Picture 1 (cartoon, rainbow, N blue to C red):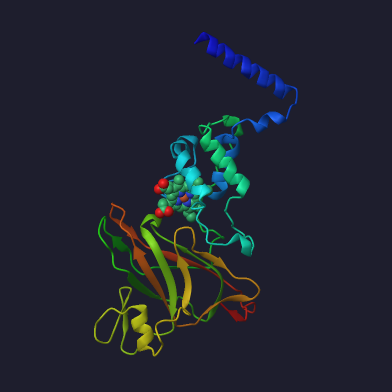
Picture 2: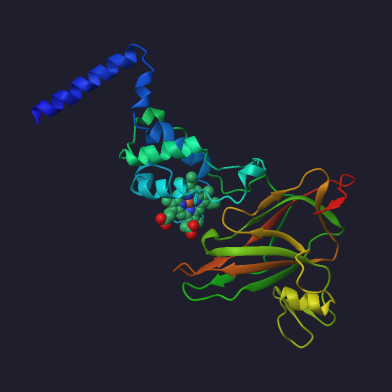
Length: 297
Ligand code: HEC
C-alpha cells in the first residue's frame, strides 16, 4: 500500500516537473476531464434540454449529475442520437447549431472510456444562464391556448384541437415565431395553424369550434366545411417537437396572418405519471408596417 502511494506520488511529481518545464506533449496522454473538456460541450449542446425543468428526463449540468450517465452519454453522442438535431451538416451549418464535431465526440468518448474523471474545479466553465424565456427575445405578440388543458397522470390522450381568435386588428406579417409548451414534459408534439374563417353556422365555444350540428370540429373538418381539401399543410405556422419549435425567416420571407383569422393549437399530449395543466403559447415577431416581405413561406 505504502509503496503504491509512493509510486503515485513520484509519478505526480515527474508529471508536475514536466509541466513546469513547459512540455506540452503530456496532454496527449492525459484523460479529458469533465471540468476542462466535457462540461463546455454539454453546456453548449445539451443543457438547454438536460436541466431541471427541461424537456429531457435528467439534468446534465453538474459533475454529480453527469457522472452516472457517462457511458450512456458516450453511446448517445457516438451514435449521433444526441443532441437531436434534424439539420443535415452537408447543407450548411445553422445559427443555433448544437451538433458536435468528430473531435468533440472523440473527447467525450475518451473521457467516458477513461473513467470519466472530474478534473479541477477551477477549470469548470460558468454554468450558462438557463433562462426560461423565449429563444429570440420577447415576441411582439404572444397567443395562448384559450384554456388550460388537464393532462391526466396516465393513459392515452386523444389529439386535441384548441382555437382562439387571432388578436389582430389588421393583417400581420410574421418574421419569426416560437412555440413554448406550458409543461414541456407532457407535450409530445404540437402544431399551430391558421384558419381563415369559421364555417357557416359554426361557433367558437370555450376554445373549441362547434359545428352547426353541435359537434367539436377538427382542423380537417373545418377545411372541408370551408371547401378546402383538408390535406394541405399550407396553413401551418409552425410545429413543435422537443428541441424544435422556433423559426425565423430571412430575405423578405415570412407568413401573413389575415385579419379575422383563428389560430389552431393542435396538441398531442403524453402523460408522465403526474397530472398537470398545460397552456401552450406561440410567440410572434412581426414585421413593422411598410417592412412586410413579399414571399409567403
Ligand atoms: C433538444 C433537447 C435535447 C438536447 C439538446 C439533448 N438531449 Fe439528450 N435527451 C433528450 C430527451 C427528450 C431524452 C429522452 C429520451 C428520448 O426519448 O430521446 C434524452 C435522453 C438522453 C440520454 C438518455 C438516453 C437513454 O439511455 O435513455 C442521454 C445519455 C442524453 N440524452 C445525452 C445527451 C447529450 C450528451 C446531449 C448533448 C450532446 C444531449 N443529450 C442533448 C433531449 C435532448
